[in-house]
Length: 275
Image (cartoon, rainbow, N blue to C red; front, side):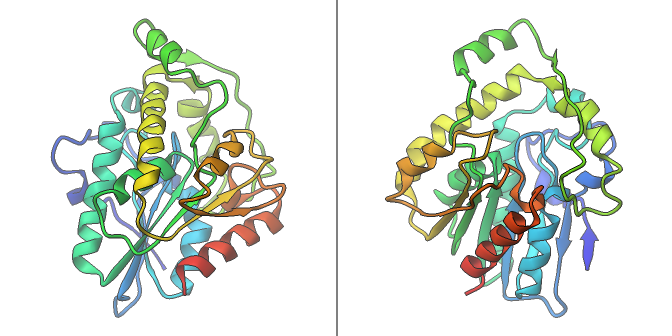
């Protein structure tokens, strides 16, 4: 079912080309019907994330009849050295190239974002004719993220070590999970990259203005138990989106610690995009 594809044409132009090998869990992939479906979904992972995080929801959308495409954002899923070379322009450029390809080849295209991927999805919706969008655990506000502070820190430090420990309670679904978790943790989760956090802060600011420009149906999945984002910010956009609160879900809802929360999120996503 899964076809691993690097989608090289989507990395054309000025988009950063990674130097380190791609970690297996982070490989871009597609799930394609034969013959090809008339509709597609573009799934966008989050900050320091990777395509393998979205396997479960991609599989469910595929089973519901959509071809699914999950590209890897530049600088992510390879190495920290690659990550520090990227900016929001690389991430947005990749999403824009992918959207252009899909809209040229399918009758209708939906977009799904997770965390920072929601910001990229919203900004892409300003210029592309998607049918619908799902924003899962959107990073509309990150507690403690001060743009001025991370910008100042980025001028003197590219990398700050932080404590990180794997959490085996999460239900990872990518091939051979969780064998790559420690590698991803060593390269990404055990570091703070000030310049890249500043890039995300800029995306948050840009998305705040773009939310009022949404012209398609949008479903937001949110949880007040999410400790990564400030979920209360979601309510500021209630006039532009439909909100589905998933009680008790973690930030990583598509492979949640609680299988019931994961199931609810996937069912809500498929129900919204599949009708």
